[in-house]
Image (cartoon, one colour):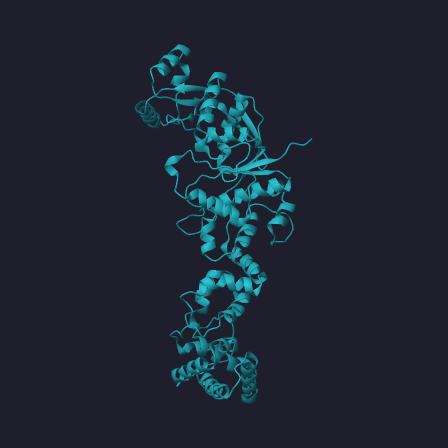
Length: 483
């Protein structure tokens, strides 16, 4: 019988969900669900200096929002808890002491002053800075005496000095490291809390994790993890390391630039479905040209063979295009509900029918944050220059635009029932009467009613939403400008 696939997503509560972390969570979730396994959420909070209040709630919320629902975790429990590392302190102490007995670790009583002095000497000699193994040479009696005297200590991993450690990664293949370059890292700190390198190995084993997906920055640490597994005599999980998500060829995504976290993109008006879809294809390919997938479809087709070794470039233009595709698939009601918060403070005129504005916008909107800039003219006509009436393609200039606006004003003033069709038919009749192309009339009307060169709809749609009085008022302003 094939072993059940068990994976974990183990973020640190440091403030926000980085896009790279969310992609790792997504790949981990997709792998698990494609194999019918269990997806575990574990909070790795042993680095208390980086802990941010409320960050765990951000993790829970992001996972729920994106549909990456865990089977075991801090909020729902499970048979291998607790699922928060700071609540597992005694477990790590027990296994660190057991590793000492097995010969894979040792007590280190070196003071901070000695370690600082050692580092300074190594830096001056231009040799790699690492612990010199002094305490690994203490006799059992010396160690027991120091422990009995209550001397502060850490527990360090005892690295082999010769040979190589080799591990297999599903993306990068076989990787070998000379043991001589490995440092005797601290496993258990003086405060009794484990380091990340130790805690994640203990937890992964005790939680029966079979597959580990994490960033390629952990490739260099993996030999240390394998030596721990081997020292305990435990089975080594399957490793899948993924390359980073980059802003461009040289620069990583950064919080400062507002493009690093899931929350950043939600605030920019992207839909969660589009974000999940897009990051799934950042460094993984299902093959073929298709680019739009639901989460369920991604589960069906996910295969780790499609993961690339190369860093993935985050192209926000591509995300915006994909987001636009998702926006156009929403029902009118769904889009209107999502658009409403973006109208607040931008359209305050109670006479404007916001549902009609939404109907106009949905086909022309790539992300929700585009909305304020596209609709601000509904509230009040912005200042604009008469140069906007000159349009080469529409064959307009200030002179013929004046004629068009004067005649449009006269014609529209006579429209009694202010419907879209009546406005449209009136202006098209005027085009025919003047013997000109459509643009010669419609472009000046569009500029006059919006004061903008780019609008979510044409002059007819805008005039219909503005209403008869406001439309005529704005056309009159346009006429005065052109005289």
